[in-house]
Amino acid sequence: MAKSNDWWTDFFPAFRPFFELLSPRETATEVRYITRKLGLKKGSRFLDCPCGIGRISTPLAKQGVRVTGVDITGSYLDELAAKSKRLRLKIDLVCADMRRINFDRQFDAAGNIWTSFGYFEKEPDNQLVLRKIFKALKPGGKFMLHVINRDWIIKNYSSIGLTEAGRVRVLERRHFDFASSINRSEWIYLVDGREKSFKENLRLYSYHELRAMMLKAGFVDIQGFSTTRDEPINFNHRMMFVIGTRPGR
Ligand SMILES: C[S@@+](CC[C@H](N)C(=O)[O-])C[C@H]1O[C@@H](n2cnc3c(N)ncnc32)[C@H](O)[C@@H]1O
Image 1: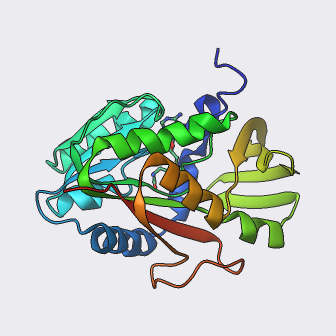
Image 2: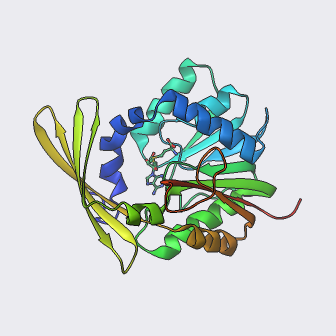
């Protein structure tokens, strides 16, 4: 049985249909942006942490990038392993908690993409993820954090939401805790007339907080954009791309 705080253990296997909501075109645009911003070339080593079902890892590997994917959801890694085998792509997969990775100066670049950050109740654990990714990079290596923008959420906050992905309908009940900046949601799934509910606790960040956390982890040259067209971050854009560099050469 998962600890009550480890909400991701139950949440993500059920979340699988939601990957289908991102269109291949959207993902292709993100992959081009990641490639350009992180300077990825054929043979570059990239850490995708966490990688999910390989939405980003697979197209990068097709470009000749040497990808290592980390994720905690076994079923996602099984799916990605089967897909990469079918496509004859080599993607190294590691099943681990992102706080526990132990790479050392191995990667030219790394990404934490599509709001895969802020999952931990204790703030030092979220900071630890940045530190571990920093450590995994070679000096001069770049990191992209792609997360939802707290300032957009606050401006557009709704305590209820309804999303459909194929035959799955989800009613989301949200409660924002201003003391911790954690959004606590209950996702109530309706599949073929049956109900199942899962918890999601997400620490939401403003850009200035992420900048401070990236600097604390050791990154320099922090830059932030809200879209793949390099628009500035403000409360009108839902997502943020925050990029930092491990100093040295
Ligand atoms: C929203 S998905 C994003 C996946 C991928 N980055 C993408 O863009 O498609 C978040 C991922 O984080 C993984 N995850 C959740 N908790 C984790 C943890 N503690 N350590 C490592 N991975 C985790 C989930 O299994 C899921 O694949």
